[in-house]
Image (cartoon, rainbow, N blue to C red):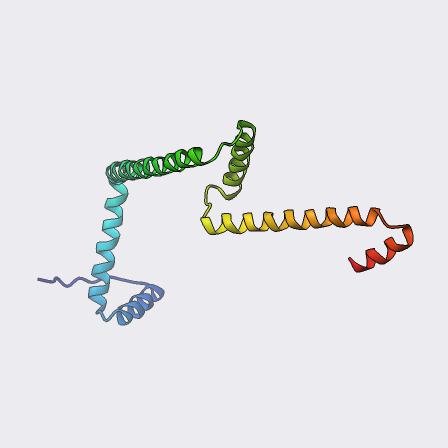
Length: 162
């Protein structure tokens, strides 16, 4: 049962009430009753924020523990796969320890640079780029050797060709 009461509102508040009650298809009374209920809920939540914070913190911890477990299991599976790859490669190649140390340093730099987000396509593209740069460097070494064999007048001609 609804009780009738008289309330006083300033013009601005009454206009807001009318505007939003029409916008949300409610009567003034329904709108004001809902507003009061929400306001009281906010007051109660503020009073009980420590209780809610403790419950929320507990749920966050539970969720975090589950996430850590999933991450740990994923890292373990990843480590097993990497170990298998290393075992296969060690059977196929006899790489000196100095070279392995250089590979390790380069791998550390690459992982730091990419923050661990290396994907195979990027790795292949980078290796192809490095391979192309090595070929260009080898070609420029060939030109340098050939150019050194020519007299100074011919060198100007070769420089324009390049």
